[in-house]
Length: 92
Image (cartoon, rainbow, N blue to C red; front, side, top):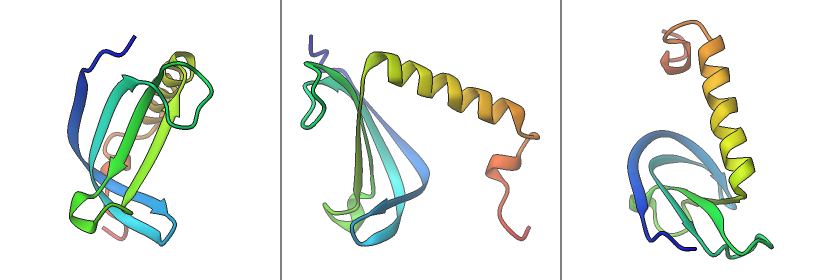
């Protein structure tokens, strides 16, 4: 079932597309019919930088189980790092 609920957030990071690496400024998360995945519905995440044009986008389609496992893995990885490490600037 499509929820039509779309979560949009501002982010800081980098993504790799056909033209190489680019800055990410936004993420969109929603449940809908996938474009490529064989499931009827997936959790879809678009990482993008609208200011850089339509090619500055990385799309992900995940099953519910995969999305929940990814969320758990992200929390576990961040919890195991020293405080502030993931946000520390290189060379600082």
